[in-house]
Image 1 (tube, one colour):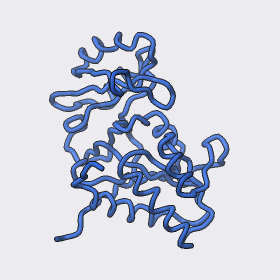
Image 2: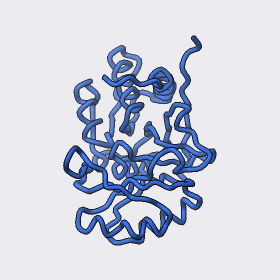
Image 3: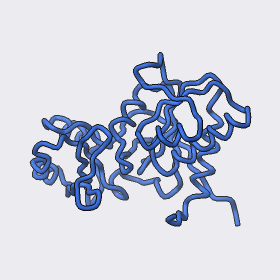
Length: 226
C-alpha cells in the first residue's frame, strides 16, 4: 500500500462529515481516497447501530463495489425520490468553494449526483486548498472517444496543455466509456466559468471537472497534534 502522508487528516475530515448523516437518509457516496474513508465510517456506524436505514447512491463502480462489500444498502439515482446529502472529496478547493474534481475518473457521475443533492459536503486535507483553481491539479475533461485528439488545439488556445489519461498502455476509460484529457494550466485557471462554457460548447466534450457554484460545505481535515 502506498504511504499517504495526509491519511490522518483525511480520516479526520471523513469522520466529521459522517456526523451530518442521519438515519433514513439517502446519501450520495463520493469517489476517491477520502471518500473511501467516508464509506468505511458510514458502514461502521451502521454496524454499530448508530445509524439505520441509510441508503447510498454511489458515484462510481469502485465506490459501489466498496459499499456492497461493507454491507451498505444501495440504490440507483433513478430509483430514489431525492438525495439528502452527498459527501465527496475534491482535488482542489478555492476560497469561494469552487472545485476541481475528477482525478479519480468519476467526474461525470459525481457531478450528476452532486447536482441532484439537497446538500453537499466536501472532505479534503489542507493540501487541496488553493488560491486559484488549476494551480495544483490538472483539469480533467471527459470526452467521447471519437476524435478525442481533435480537442487538443482548442484546449491549447484556452491556455491549457492537454494529456490523454492512460491506463498502462491503453487510454483510461471512465465508467461511461469515455476518455479523459488532463489539462494543465501554467498560471491556473483565471476564468473558470468562461473556460467551462468554452469547453462544454465543443461537440464531443461530455463534462469538465470544474464543479462551480454548488456551494458545498467544506470540511478540512487535520492530523492530530504529535
